[in-house]
Image (cartoon, rainbow, N blue to C red):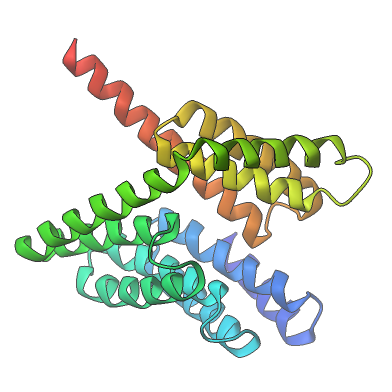
Length: 240
């Protein structure tokens, strides 16, 4: 089944039957699926091809390229090749810092997986240093979002967007909902975070489609929050 899909996607790309951005998303999502199936070599081919297309059609310093490099790093970490993953995470981190600044959700998540790669390599001192950096970034993010005025401003913006969602393009509302989910996740309010991410996801699925990069990004955020909610529930049970 997978081989048939790959053949179809190759043919569609060669004939120009699919819009370039959509074609890239399909290659990337196929690579992610194959990685989950532990078909690592096949996943590598798909993810590397999607990265090549991103670099050809977008600015090499763009956010899309950074996200694509990050996904390739995720593959190599799952593949038990932490040294290769480490280099890719460093590249992705530089891209995220360029686009978002050092104090961002994306940089925080990349630092966490980079720390995991260092632990796999038994580089304990560097892993400890990264842990310290992770705490500093998280604290700075929390300081930023704990400003009540800022949070209320975002909430008021959401209300305004939601009230106009049926009259105007609601992609802005979907983006704001996603960002509000990120804010609550950083604050540790995971239940609110997953609620906002879920609402953003519904909008993006309708407006952009399930295979669009922004939709997949929100799905990934929902998965991360759900994962940490399970971790916290398990910790509570162990503490009882």
